[in-house]
Image (tube, rainbow, N blue to C red; front, side, top):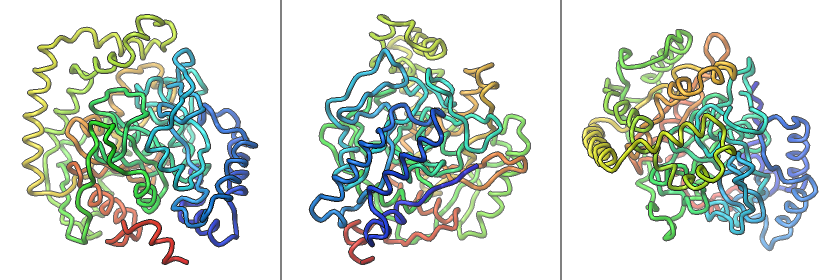
Length: 462
């Protein structure tokens, strides 16, 4: 069951006051990881002695206690480079030791954050279920042999287990939001380009983005202030949009007839109950259609974007096909069926849908849907890996195709104890409004001026 550990704010307060220290936090984290054993959360955790030594180095930095993330531990999905550590993408034959650290991760390290290790994932970041790995298959913290979700499976578990308060992961088609939903935490896919993707081994480079996972919106805010920055080396880089200033949030709710729960009545009842409560939380709710979003989502794996994975992995597929899991190999090879005409046809169709969706934002600010329509056990996924994976991405596949920002919000459990999550999404660069809506759904206080400089915030606390 979900057992979140201390938050970023709590760890900072402890370290700054002297009631705790980065070295003691490092020892606690290492002990927590060791106690679980090889459960599929981590691929390469930092050994205990090295972790404590790294924490001691942070303690000795000049002005250490003023660092925005002083001694806060975090994990990194194993498709993102950290110098001196292997990047495996859950494929041992593909693995290499990184010589440079991804700029986004480096910003965290410079801010005093403590790197704990590399987390498990669906191989080559291809999948939403968490079972596509040669390492131990992780399970959801909610038990019942429930899948962890993927591809950022280990990242979600590390947060849900309370081992670290946040993780850096990725989301191309739902890889951050789906495992967050299945483990009862917050998973935020910012607008593409707000966090540099340099140093990420791409799945689909035109769609990839780095994401954050945590147990609270407050933690996302703190980490985002550090990690977000324009990067001239990232061709998709762009500035964040306007801050939320307390305006009424116009929330679109698709009609029940457009929602798909795949026969899962417990999830249907749970989500409709969430919708009933939204009006009482200060939102201006209105009915809106989900159809153009779903039409865009169908393009992702039925269209030529699957071939984009071959740009990065085509040579490896040709040279070492036996090193790739069969289900991943099947997905990769399916990309060869598309030609240039297919690409242009799909791009034109997507642009039509983007225009339709773009007009919708004149009437609404955000949309709320289920993050998941249903869940599966590990055995169910392994018995039907492609169909179950498609169902898991029903509400997430369209996110990056339509240039949206989205956050998975934990909303309790269904009647049978499975985790229920709602997804809030909005247009690109409306990130602050989307996070404000998510915080309100969680009854989490979030000041309108939540994004003041982190160092100023820490100074005011002292």
